[in-house]
Image 1: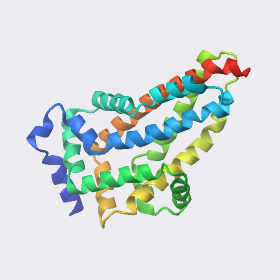
Image 2: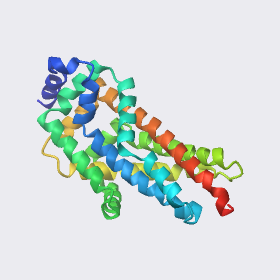
Image 3: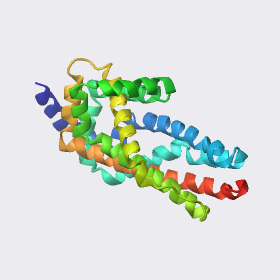
Image 4: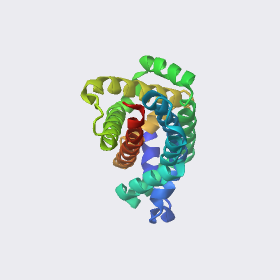
Length: 257
């Protein structure tokens, strides 16, 4: 029955959804703007903290204003939106929209946004990371199906490499650390974060939600949507990290580092 329902949803998109704006409709219906806003704020706060850890608190308004400008959530949202639009065929987006914009799809999208916002709390994140060790087989199967741990680990790793490249671009004498030595730690944290996050999302699922949700990601349509978002996010995050590194590197000489 679940497979039948999903098949109907993926093949009965409204005629209007096949228009060129189907990607934008899917982007908004999936909660992407709110998810990006939560990411932007977390990243902004983390980048601002670099003033203390790298610049000895001497970055001042120049550094703070640069970080705030780089992390403007509207700018980041439109950057990722454009990246998804360039990668996802509108007809595929229309089929994905028929599931995402359904009653179940919208309920799940709201839960994903709420969970992502909650994970901005250190206490909630810590609890989710601890709970990740107790993840059930169904959660693990969905994560493995979508290759989420590896995807997010690659995005995080490449973003950190880009950050150090940005530092080196504006402070050539800076001793860049060996990132390969940090790969294992990044991979482990990514796995735990993703697992904890989806355990938090699924904790409010109704019966059969997880099975139907997993079935969606196991379609060519779901896979195409997943790939487009991941690739657009990685492109944006890499560019953002490089620019942040440049901002840090410009001020390093002031601190005799």
